[in-house]
Figure 1: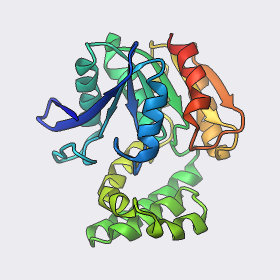
Figure 2: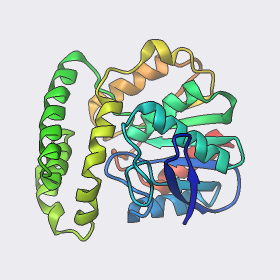
Figure 3: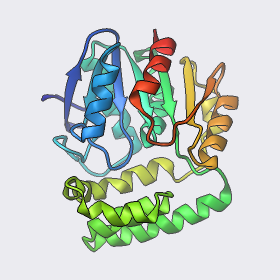
Figure 4: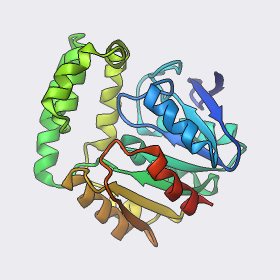
Length: 259
C-alpha cells in the first residue's frame, strides 16, 4: 500500500500495478481498492498500463475529511495524477465516471484522455424526483446508524435484482459493504442531477463514453446526451456487457483509445 495526501490533508491509500502509461482507476459506489473484483480489474488493466487503484475518500484505508464536496474528490484525483507523474489517463466506472468528467473539466492538461463507463446521472425529471425520494430514505437510515439497510435500499433503488440484494448479507464481503454505506451519500451527490450538458460542451480532453448493451435504458440515454454535448466524444455500446463490465472485454477499448 502507498499513500499520498490530497489538498485538504486527507490521506489517500493506493496500489500500483503494471507498467506503461499511467491510468487512474476511479471506482463507483460501494467499491474500494481491495474489493476482489476491483483488484482483478486493476490487474487485467495492468497488462497495458501502470494502474493507480486508489481508495476514494471515506473508503478502505483512505481518510474522510468533512464536509464532503465534489471539489474535494477532484482534488483527490489531482493528487493521484501527481503521484503518477503529473499527467494520466482516467477511467471512471459508474459514479467514478461522473468524477472523471468533472476532472476533465477542472484539471486541464493533467488529464490526457478520459473513458467513462455507464455514467449514472438521472436521465429525466421524473427519475430525478424518484431518486430524490430514495436519497431522503437512505440519509434517514444512515443518520440512524442502519448501514446495512441503507446499502440494501440503495442497491434495490438503482435496479439491482431484489433476490441478489437479499442474498448479499450471506457473502463474506457484506461487513465491508456495510462499512462503506456512509459513502453512498457522496455517490448520491454525484449522480442526483441531470447530466451537465452545458458544462460538458467545454470539455477539451479526448473522451470516450461507453455503455453496456445490457445496462439500463436510462444509462444509454445519459451516454447519448453526453456524447452529443462533449466535442468529438466517441460513443461505444459494448456488446453483451451490463453495468458490471468484464475487464478483459474492456481492455482492448482502453488500449485502443488511450494508446
